[in-house]
Image (cartoon, rainbow, N blue to C red; front, side):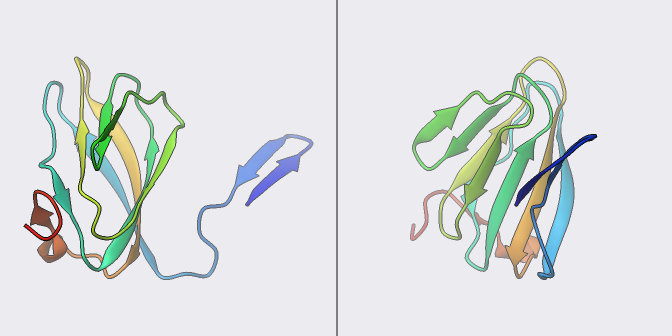
Length: 107
């Protein structure tokens, strides 16, 4: 939901839902593995400029404020450029690092 106010705006991501919220920090020049989850969907809100996002075969160079929704089973990766990268992650469903699988789904 997006709500305009006289003083600005509110962007509501979750309302009365079970979720997990994380801050992901990627060191300069580093990247996460190319991985997927079976039990949850992820939403990323990019907070830093200069990052690279891969969702499936698609590669993006988002600006701060861009958002991505990654469904369960879709492989994804985050990479930082020359500077540290920060991403707000909201997990919908069962969130556990045990639900992280390397590579393409079904490999």
